[in-house]
Image (cartoon, rainbow, N blue to C red; front, side):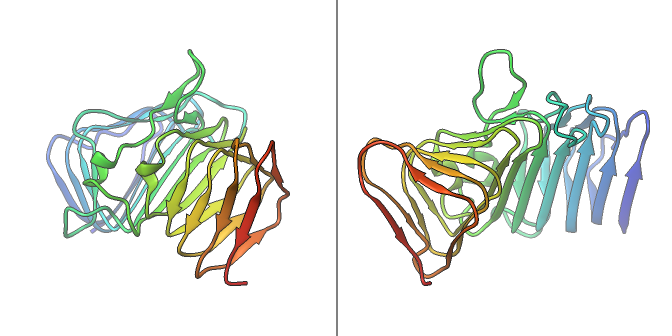
Length: 239
């Protein structure tokens, strides 16, 4: 069955595993997932739609498409976040491999922040079974920033990043595709086997030579690309 749940004061998903065609659950309150959910098509969970509640995942979600949302998304709320506690695991419907598509959207920052600033720790490879290669992977902070300090955590993915106050990538990216939807800073280089799309200003702040390579794909930029400091900048793509 396809189950769509809406709860103004909260949603209780129960203590028994769920097996469905699809699941959509949305509430202004906090939402805790403590039991396994399998869905053939899609799982979409949203908490804190008024900007106050968190979405806490402490169990396995198995579906080919998983979307986790916390917060209002209005650009001014900064607190609501997705929390991955012990037991959190994301996989495809019929295997232990990563899902085909995984999206995490929240008001709070994603990745490391200054002390006291609400954030979600960057998801580790362990929650995806050890690899995100080939997965469509989107991370968006609607009220703050996205920061990647360990680029191996996104290696091989079709990666989309967006931060209301920017995106910081510390290190080299080796991906299947890259879409930077907002302003970003990059300290390393990008090697992508597919398209690279830069929609906002991109500041390359590494201390040496840097490159942006789409290899067999298209390198497209509607935002300005600037190289800060010494070192050459190399751009490459199919066209």
